Amino acid sequence: MSKKECVKVVVRCRPLNSTETADNRQVIVNVDDKRGEIKIKNIKGDSAEAEKVFAFDSVFGSNST
Image: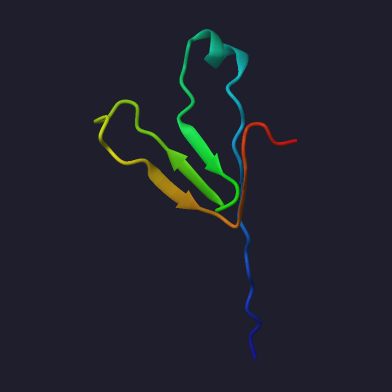
């Protein structure tokens, strides 16, 4: 008799660091903590291109403590 294992995935997205801010880089990751989703923009692609959406068990944005 085998036991089933369950793995939960939790993601925390960090804020831009001082080097990235000094280089005027853009935030391309949007966090929806209510839905457990991370949305990533492709700033080098077509502006009409849809964001890539990834779902996790739990997500934390750059303002989380």
